[in-house]
Image (cartoon, rainbow, N blue to C red; front, side):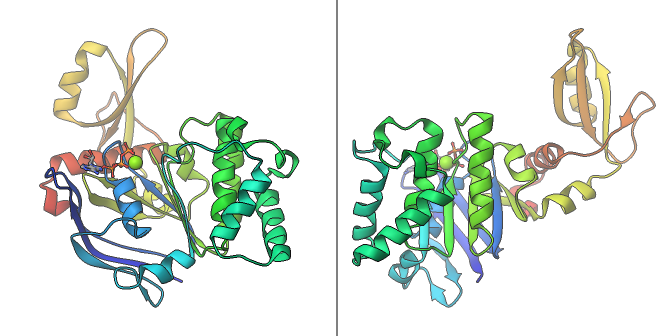
Length: 298
Ligand SMILES: Nc1ncnc2c1ncn2[C@@H]1O[C@H](COP(=O)(O)OP(=O)(O)OP(=O)(O)O)[C@@H](O)[C@H]1O
Ligand SMILES: [Mg+2]
């Protein structure tokens, strides 16, 4: 199955252009959508989930036209919004049972089987009798995945699911996504570059409603091979270096000097070439979007 977006644009009533002629094709596997605050990630995800309409453009999932036939899409969609709201004070198992009934799974035995499966996949079997409202942040996020798996979705959209999770929970959560992405399209957004690195088969960088990059993490990194240079400077020199070079990032050393990473084909003698990282890819894409006229970045 493939998701195809063509020329999607969205301007909110207050004049904010959140999506700008965005075209994108996504196949089975893990797709990471990376972008800073306000990039348009949630807008794009709500649009794909058919919860809001674009002003222009078209969207297809396999044979289904999302704009003309949103109900068909919703039957095969699992969506976890950025803010899930308040959970009721009933056990995970009972809440899933209720949600499964809402989703039209009326046979009791079928409900039981699917609920057991959802709890198992998300490592919540042991706490299935515990009230969801008392779950930790990480457990709530896993419950969010459990509930969206109830209808066996083929298109799964999760909006910044790892925000606020501790490293162990984050890893556990990402492993769950990895497990369910073997048979479906999983689109997840994040501004944590690390989330994408080992996990995603495909990725895109979004900013100001425009796609700056759509590639695989490996290809993106390889593309910067030999072009990332580093040197130590004093903090007061930074503006000067930023004027002369594309400085992607800077970090303080213990002695309060700055270690900068620079994108350039040929470094200065004081520069040392280093292996590119996905973070370099991300910052390079964002920097390009600042220096190019908006339309030229796509
Ligand atoms: N309902 C709305 N009405 C008006 N403007 C909105 C609305 N929702 C989002 N925006 C604006 O559209 C732009 C994109 O917002 P969006 O929430 O899609 O970004 P995001 O990438 O999800 O950001 P974050 O990482 O902070 O969640 C922002 O400038 C935002 O202020
Ligand atoms: Mg968002």
